[in-house]
Image 1 (tube, rainbow, N blue to C red):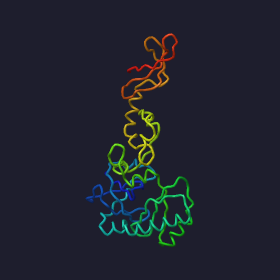
Image 2: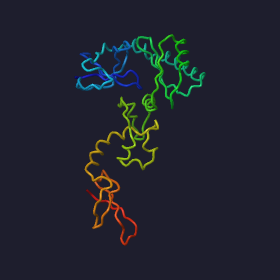
Image 3: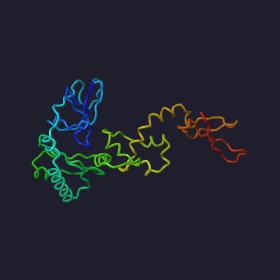
Image 4: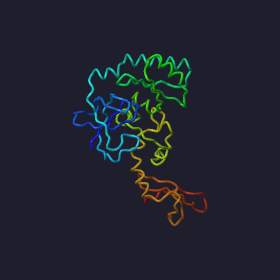
Length: 268
């Protein structure tokens, strides 16, 4: 089944919707019906899926909701009004300062039906914002939601350029940010370059470390495990590291006449 991948905010997750016979394309704004009412979202991509294999936590199997219609200029202004956004941001920032809360306001999102405002923020730990919510509710007379997002989500929303000179992947085509681990850097031999060279502008490990990780794993599986004994030039040594791109291993062997050890690269 061909489905449209819809995102309601740059820092929100994506959802599956049925485009039906509507002529929608990537980048189009559309109106959809959700469990919280009608919403305006953006088509970020399309995907062929097996409806029986949709992960739990997203739309239930065989219940992909349809896109209602394409959004018009009035719909877009209703949600993305710069005037309303700036006012809400300013009020919330003043209240955050009033209560001296350890949080940074990043974005604000008005629901399409005009009954809910979501404030997105980042913080190093949990924040008690109960009084903030009460004041915001009194001020706007809307249902108020505060959503804590990650620093990577902020970078995705703000946009910038990476070390490669290209637009950030997260702001360009990555819609769901997967976990990037130090094991990926170790596998690709990047860990020795220093954290600043393998970290993005968000301060986290670069998303592109995940791109070649499967290939490195496949090549590494063809090499003997680290710690394996191997004879080199008639001497018994131990594999201490891999040179995956060269399909070789580094072997530590005893030096001549007991003079320390030598590291020998051996092609596999």
